[in-house]
Image (cartoon, rainbow, N blue to C red; front, top):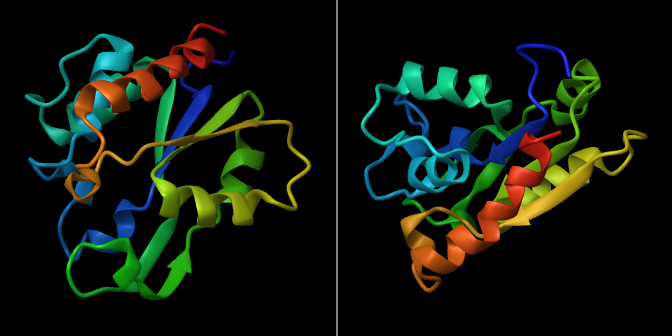
Length: 156
């Protein structure tokens, strides 16, 4: 493992909701920072955004948006139109020590796995339940149980 290089990328679709703001996962109702913080054992929600990102890197976690831009009314993924993706395949190629890519929610997983379908990289691809408040049918404790196995890749 090279210092400063993630062994796990957590991929979300937050770029589509940014709308001139920071990523959607910075919204108070989104549980991303709580979930990944519980996985790495650091209370992330109270930190400023830049500090959160640094803590993730210190714990070998990278954060990347699957979608670079899109049109969408409201916050539901089903409302995404005319999206453009980020080059996820180029990212994983640039990170030779990357062991896994975890997708935050079904939309990120569907798009991200399509982007990596032709990749010859040997990566574990993990679909996680969405941290979005729109995915409230699954209680936080259940989401956390699904996210906790990410620790496997962080201890490599």
